[in-house]
Image 1 (cartoon, rainbow, N blue to C red):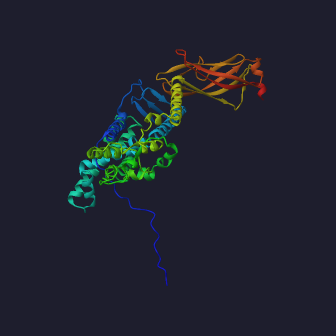
Image 2: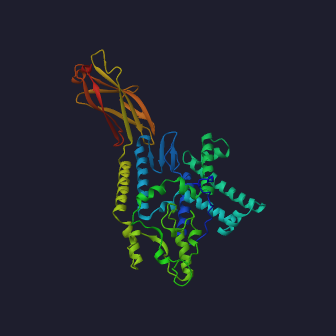
Image 3: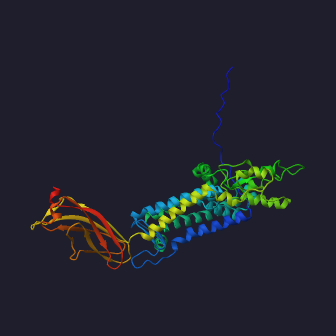
Length: 471
């Protein structure tokens, strides 16, 4: 007898569309406020102006790739100061660790760009197609003129939002009014059009269609968050000792199994099944459950923020610890201390950084030149960066254990004029008098300095002077 061949079970399941229901409450209001603020910051920031003087960009926040600088209001960061950007990224990572350790995936639920734009797209969808039940019915219906019209209107609004999103991003990298004019006259560079097209497509697809799939499958943070959380982390949870057994009859718990928490969840999970990777801690299920508790005359908090370390106490009917005792614990305090320390270091570096940058490259072919009078001369390529917004004439000097004459190629007084916000390269000569100890010795450490006579700004760099014995 031949055994029938069974097809192996599929490891993949088709996506079931999720249609979150509208809900009101304190957490939903907080999400609306955060969405409004973050979107306003994103769309408006490139249009803010900041006067930096003539010949300087007046955009408050600008990533100037052409001149390799980053402007943030009164702060200007040059390429060699990238450690500041690196420090900010480290602070962002520590901030994410801090909030996750204290309140779970609160970043994901409120301020993650995927969450913000998905919320915005769902708002448009609800405005055009109706709330949850209406959208489900429309989804199950066959195509008709009405359905095509509603879907077309929704997609058109989504596309406008996506285009504005991609357009706003490119405005951060060049003067916004100028680029907007170039886009309107179709004279913008190809890279601008390509960037807008890519960001428009990703925003349209991620916010409109992928939605929770990005959070569940594409984002790595759900897999990492477990390392940031512990039993004292406050996160959204279902108090099953209050809710079970579910139902409306005699002896049932507070949960009436209305599925209100499921219908509002943007990732489509049932929070009553316990902690899940898909939960983004948006707390909308808390609002939905609290509304149902109010309607049925039961106390709120069946779903709420809960630390696992308080579960035993709550099951016994005693009050849990204060939320601040969960937030202010050694782990979060360490994160907060590291975050603050790096912030203080960056602020100090910004305040104390010099307006002059100096670098020197000795010219070693030949290593030195003996002049006709017996003097020994060394040549150096000097690069001087002026970070000020006006031209400065810097005095070039040398500190050495003996007398050395300094001269600058093309200059008569040993000074270099550097235009505002530019770097200038000049050849500098150090000459030791004939018969002097420096002229006859080997390598002698010296210090080249550049000083602004009109301010305390000064830069120096160590180098070496080679005499005849260097041969």
